[in-house]
Structure formats: structure tokens, C-alpha cells
Length: 169
Image (cartoon, rainbow, N blue to C red):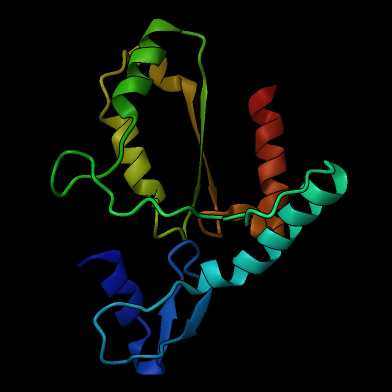
């Protein structure tokens, strides 16, 4: 079952759909008969505030003026990785880089409510890459309660700050 079907069906009896970027955020389903959700409630909840903050920063603080709209997500569809039924993965390049640089360390951040890039899929890809066993300890995982953008949840933002400080030490 694809994540769209899961997001649509889990709370179907309540007329709700889950957010893809953050499954903690739900929205009203406008077409109960459709097999897929019409929108992502978590994206809809963050689009306005993020766009406003970015525009304020760029225009107010950086003094950059332009009529082009700021887009949180640019259209990159359709996804095509050259292989059917596949997903984007940079694990081969990462393994090559880590094998060449024994001092490289990686901090992997993941939210348990992220349905776009689930932490377990990242963990699986990293644990199965062609990496010298001595360098596997250079990978650190940090989990969060929120989704893809864990920093929208204040306790996760605070944990993220601590995790980054610890990682950099």
C-alpha cells in the first residue's frame, strides 16, 4: 500500500486524512470516494507561515526585492530515477565518500511522523551501503516525535538544538 492510500485510509471513518510531511497533522477529506488524499494537511499548515517568514527575511533583512514568488517546494514531478519502482538514494556516493574520509561523521535526523522520508527507510539504506565496518560508528541517528520538519514542534526544536550541539562537540 502506498503512503497516499495509508494517509487516506487510516482515519477514513472520521473523514480525516494524514499529513505526508507530518502525520500528526490531519485535515478534512473533501472527496471520501477518492483512493488518494487531495492535499497534504501538514504542507497546508506550514506553507503560509514559512512563505511569510522567508519573504520578510529576504525583503526586510537582506533588502532583496524581486517580483518572483518564493516557492517552498518547486515542481519536480514526475520523479524519475531511471529505474521503475525505486527511490532516491545517495547511499552509494555517501559510502564512497566515507570510505575515502575516515574522519567524516554523519548525523541523520528523522521524525517518526514523517511519511515522505521515513526514518527506517534511511536507516535501512545506510545500514546496507558498502561501508567499511570501522566507519559505521561515524553515523549517528537522532529521532524526533514530529515529521519531516521536526523543528515545527517546539520540544523537537529544542532537542534538535541539543543533538546538533552534541554532534558538533
